[in-house]
Image 1 (spheres, rainbow, N blue to C red):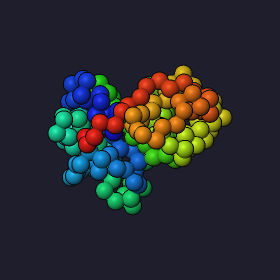
Image 2 (cartoon, helix red, strand yellow):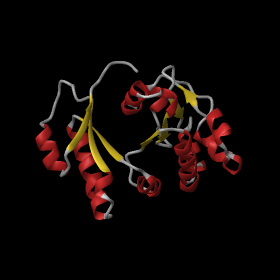
Image 3 (cartoon, rainbow, N blue to C red):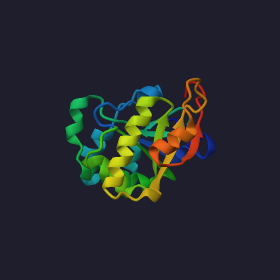
Image 4 (cartoon, rainbow, N blue to C red):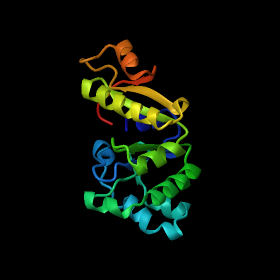
Length: 189
């Protein structure tokens, strides 16, 4: 979410879209203080006739101009969105926006692997705490075992100016990946 807000602040916000692909427990709208009326479930139900105007009508607009495709409002609705539907929706969004950020669940499953395969860049957004480092280490090792293209993966520190900081060189050694960028906490979005 911080990355999407940063891109929206530095570019035309109407050309930036974030998709909450954490289909059971998505929190992008919560973080952005939005109350969506329509979600990705609506897009999946209309997939047979989903064109750009219809898809645009399903997006929620943040006051900054950033567009959001919200996760389902209830965890039970996640089963209504297939991997094929999700990838088709994101393909359509890529034609509509300069930047499409896909926020995912931290679960390596068929959906995540499908999204990763189609991504131009994969940003592992890492908070400066041990559980986050540990989880990213396990995920990166899994991707290496699956022979995922390492050239697509970048490590981004989130809340890089937090008081409780870990040693960045130690993080890089542990994850076997250089830190590419840092996003500071800047208060409420």
